[in-house]
Length: 91
Length: 457
Image (cartoon, rainbow over all chains, first blue to last red; front, top):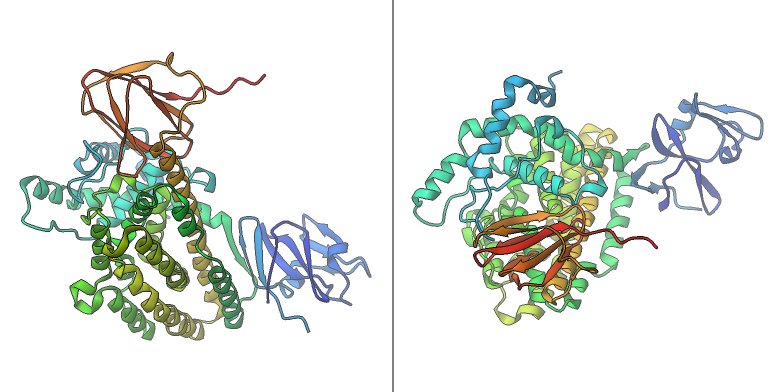
């Protein structure tokens, strides 16, 4: 399904039971599944390191690197301040 | 890597720039219409080679600088298009023909092209960003959603034209804005044809054949458009109404020249082509109805009706015969460029629609005797102008007062029915809008000054 959200660092959007997070990676806004690589904790409640562009999960302090985050990226297109994301249909 | 923008600034190339500034095709016209398609008034006097590289932004697309850059880039691309007069060349036409297509003039212009492309299209790079792992299934879902949203709403542009006091003039103004593209329809696609790039090459050719009417001249889409123009009282001569092309109308047309001229943008072109073919039937159906309701039985809507039918095929062909096989052959990595093309053509369509509607509103105000200055203007500096003096249609970056102290002057914003201003009468051109002025009487005295800002209490 198609999701539209604000194109802004740390903008969050929930669809049914799934959460999506918009964040900066290498100067571009991308959208990732808002789940830690470890146990699926909410990255959007974690902390973002501007220098390394890593996100630390609030559950177990697990660091999600840009490479980890890339594996969770969703197909998206930003036009100005609007982000359009193709996400799986909710169950 | 060679940077032609830096090269242009070198003293050795100053003669090239001076040659372009003084070139015959770019000199101003003397009236509202142009006599031949080789005359492309483009005021380069306020520009220098070093200033060409400053990119336009979304907020500066409707400015005088944008108009000049877009006229220039459009004219450069159009040197690839052949235009011939409808009958034997007049001496003046022959001279202009050789002037516009002169190899040295073409070469000088070509040197400007890369920097102009960056200036005109750089904002697309910053405005549109495609990220993430796109697959064919994602692209299908995304295009299905975008198209169904587009088709769910009636055309706001058609509705706005219907609500004006002069829908005939507004519809003509719209036809003028699509003329830079439709009068040479599919010339950009023709740019994409030379070469040898596999089965999709032949599939594109099938679409192109339709555009060119299968070699039957009355069926050629540009011919159909000429007939529409004629039927509503507009000249079908190529670019005779050049002066009224708004900067964003030129930008939209040039975008398709750009993505077909720069071969590395091929996948972007295919996405943009798909989107244009996809949205045309819904819009054209409504615009055709609007033309019938406005002009009655005499209007020829063949151009718009043809596209309602054929573009249903073209959008399917663009997706199933161009996009799908190319993704199969080259992988999902080419999809983001296609998405970029779709979004760029959507964005440019929205931008040019807004520009048109704002110009239409200004023309409506002019036609209704409105657009008057809010405060006194008679004390502003005036200048005497000879009868026949023509101030070319230009975009004004800030609100300007055009007032007549003595004599009579006509002003137009593109409705092709100039309003005559008598002594004591004035209009205000809003920021970003286009206006042209012609002096009707000898010794007329005219105010053309920025509107004084209102004092804050």
